[in-house]
Image (cartoon, rainbow, N blue to C red; front, side, top):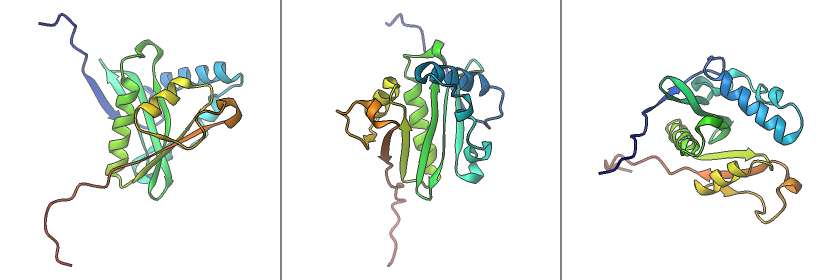
Length: 174
């Protein structure tokens, strides 16, 4: 019998950027980017209109809630008709090393597939080795020379092809 405490239940919610539960995560993300890159990153985080992360426009913003509080989140937006672009994958600093970012990425992949996307594209910064490791560990293909100095590349692009939709198993006459 294990003495480990049970994992708390996480709830996935779809929200708009303007949802007050999003603000603390984006603020902390902006603060961390500012520290890592030496320039204010908050304007970059606000660059895309809220609508790009909503269903009618092909995007999604989701949060993982634990006891009603946002502990992680992420989004995708339409990149092209068959490609979703991941944005703002983030885990609150008090909740890291629990696999939450992997859960966010997996949920975003499922959401993208249900919306008909066949590919996911993303970029991450050269000073974000944790993000680079996450994407490599979750099956993303780097679109850059992995042995090059990340600082010489700039934003590091990745892609992942999503599986084709499951067939219904019904025969179709052609």
